[in-house]
Amino acid sequence: MDQKVFFIKTFGCQMNERDSEIMAQSLSNHGYVEGMDINGADLIILNTCSIRAKAEQKVMSMLGYLRKTKIKKPDLKICVAGCVAQQEGKKIISKMTHVDLIVGTQNIYNIGELLNNVSINGPQVITHLEDKYDIPNLIPDLSPATVPFRKFVTIMQGCNNYCTYCVVPHTRGREVSRKVNDIIDEVAILVKAGVKEITLLGQNVNSYGKTNSVSDFSGAYSFSDLLRDVSKIEGLKRLRFTTSNPKDLTDELMRCFEDIDNLCHQFHLPVQAGSDSVLKKMNRKYTVDQYLTQVDKLRQYCPEIALTTDVIVGFPGESAQDFEGTMNLLEKVQFHGSFSFKYSDRPGTRAIVFEDKIEESVKSERLARFQARQGEISLNRNREYVGKTKTVMVEECSEEGVKSRTETNHIVHCAKTTELKPGDCVDVTITHAGRHSLKGQLKPLR
Image (cartoon, rainbow, N blue to C red):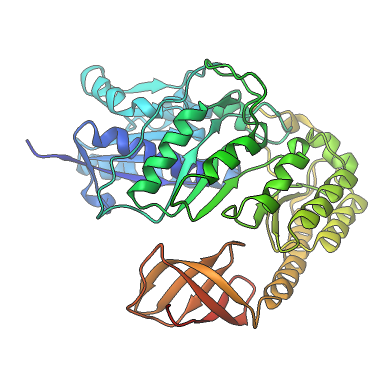
């Protein structure tokens, strides 16, 4: 019997990228093979994100396109997974009757079995959420020819914070921490197979070990303990993590940047706004001064740390003075980079009913001003690296040259060479800085 080919289109963040890997592995265990061409697929999965309205709109647009594809290819199976699937569920399948399977965020591990049920019973909507469960283990069987140089490893899922603008607690459920030994074992297997860089993933990694789980924690084991244990795995060159909530950032975790040699000197610490009144309405549970104190401490522990953040402009009720607070915070911190967005209403969140919504033109003007200044700061920050020699990890080698990355997460482009491959670490002297990347001269290999 011919093998069936699946194609996954991933929308959104690193968590979704990891979820796509999980589904790919589950499908491979059920006789599917992954294809790179959507037109040749027997199964198409849209792994969706609903953090912002634009991402959701892209998914619905693509489903509209796939309606025509299925008319031409009736045996094609179409699946919607991820946060939009969890959030909209039956609404999708009622509007898009050509969709065969809606699978929610906690159910992706069983996608192979669920597709078998579709073949027998017809279209399915599987979106139930559990407050307590063990995150299943799906450690990939990597052959030497397919080992990537870096991998994401899930350490927890869900969120308990209920920020008033955010859908994550509604689409991914309550926080659940994965068993310590399962994480350590997975990283050890990956590194032994040849993976050089690991990124630990969770909606709020800082609260790892404090959260609901079938396998209860004693409370004595924290995220910083996990970082230290993972970092000791022999052969691991680089260790990263994302994402963090400032309300749960401890001195113990900040000290890890000073103590752990292979922990990359890069920290994404979302602030969202530079106004205490806006932060309170967002239910962020910290103040601007508390955030700035954390930044000062991080730089005391690790002076060369590169800080990035998330910012939402135009939150309901954000005054001109509130926005100036965000601009002032940007000036004080001088972030290396940021992800900034206009506020948009998301289904099920508290902020959707807030009054004093900001006009779209005002949001656009504020976002443009913030991004323009951030671009200037990023360029100045990048210029600080010119003339310095940094160790980079190679990501791509092509006719155009070598793309690599510093431990501070800066992309560095160099001239092509036949001596390097992805995962190699090499010293580079930085010769030029742009807003989004650096250029460098490869040092001779030792």
